[in-house]
Every structure is written in structure tokens, then in C-alpha cells.
Image (cartoon, rainbow, N blue to C red; front, side, top):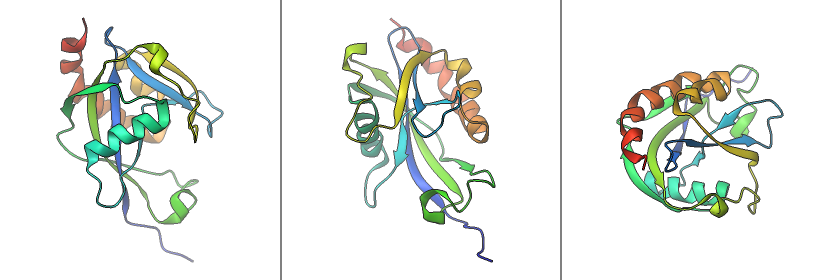
Length: 160
């Protein structure tokens, strides 16, 4: 029997806030359930986490029209549930370690296009920041709650 992976996949995530103080979330194509997540993805070898965050945002939602507001104070981790362990990322990782960035969206809704070259989302919407932990898949809820706790005080300043 193969041993459980111990490494965490390095990842960057974006909490994208519009002028109303709402957060971008997308429904993943590969999850038929009612789970929504913020843009995020792997950091390439040698890539700066902030550069990865902007790249992932453009790859997933078709725009990088955003300004950096804040960076998470720590790397946040989550473990995959047992049914996904060994199946995702070719079984190399037990979960992800993520550096998150709070960003002010500088574009308009018309700039968002989830029909990208390699689509990840089937739908998108703007959500209340406090709703985020209830929108994500259960195994990422603690991570989203930590993000809300850390970034919520700064979101009020983003609202016009």
C-alpha cells in the first residue's frame, strides 16, 4: 500500500472585491454541486506568489484588472478529504498551502469572462464576504473563515 503524501502544493489565491464590497466566486466546472470558490491555482516553480495570483485570475476569469490591497499574513493550508487523497495532482500532494491576496477589482462586470482557454468555472457571481465559508466545499471552510477574519476589516475601505 502506498503511503499518504505529506507535501502541500504551493498555491496563490485572490479575494477579488468589487466597488460594492462583494467578493467574486465561481462554480467549478468539475463540481456539479452548489459550491463556489475564489480564483486560485498552483504557483509555478520559481514564480512569485503575487505574479501567480494575477496569472491565475486572468486564466480563470479572463481579466487581471485589479490592484493589490493586502497579502495574507501567513500561508494557509488545507488537507484533501480521504476520497480525493491520492487522486488529485497525481497523488503527489495531501492538500495545498496557499498565499492569499486581497485585491480591488478595477474593471467592470463586462471584463469578466469565464469562457477562457481552459475554463474552470461554469458560473460566477458576487457574494457577501461573510457568506464565503458557507459557499465553499466543506474541506476548505476553515481556510475561508480565516481569510474572512483577516481581510474583512480592509474590505470596508474598498467600497466606494
